[in-house]
Amino acid sequence: MEIVVRRLQDQDIEALAEIEAAAFSMPWSEKDFRNLLEHSYCHYLTALAEGEVAGCCGYTESCGEATIDNVVVSERFRNQGIGQRMLQELILRGEAAGIEAFTLEVRVSNAAAIRVYEKSGFVSEGIRPGFYEKPREDAMIMWRRRKGAAGI
Ligand SMILES: CC(C)(COP(=O)(O)OP(=O)(O)OC[C@H]1O[C@@H](n2cnc3c(N)ncnc32)[C@H](O)[C@@H]1OP(=O)(O)O)[C@@H](O)C(=O)NCCC(=O)NCCS
Image 1 (tube, rainbow, N blue to C red):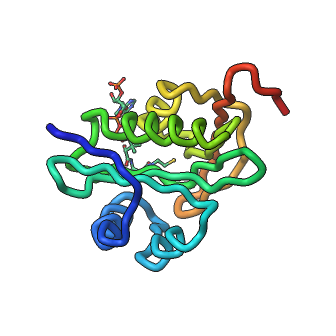
Image 2 (image 1 turned 60 degrees about the vertical axis):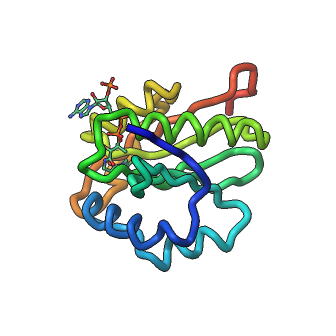
Image 3 (image 1 turned 90 degrees about the horizontal axis):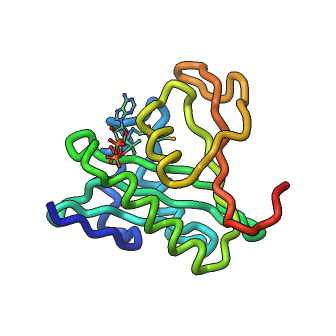
């Protein structure tokens, strides 16, 4: 299967909003995705599988640190390495742009996502109790710091 990962474009948004709606209880809307394109501190990538929009991921940048606030792959394309491929590309591009550390939150029960993050070098640095709604659940806070970068 041919996978291409490139910057998120306006033409991807309708399909991405559908993928979101199927994946999350509080999904991003088309409007939420459009907002990303208007802010230079938002860096988002789309994965295409055989030319079809298969998922996206991205981060919001602040003071040299990146918060990854969305990672999603369409259910029919999961477990084929797309999630990891997108994250690798996001980290490469972020580090090239000077990002020293990436962070994210993930539901503690989301074993597939945690697996992908750990394979991409993220480690758990704590739990935020009751962080998520619909359903209420704890969040695991994960970080990936560039080797040699100062810790907090
Ligand atoms: C998390 C997500 C983006 C991963 O995308 P993906 O393309 O399926 O990821 P990959 O194929 O690269 O890797 C999936 C890994 O999880 C593993 N996995 C899948 N289901 C699993 C489970 N129930 N328990 C443990 N590991 C699991 C796979 O075996 C694979 O690991 P491996 O490569 O070592 O075999 C996708 O599952 C998704 O969109 N989920 C819904 C949205 C979501 O939860 N996003 C994250 C929010 S923080």
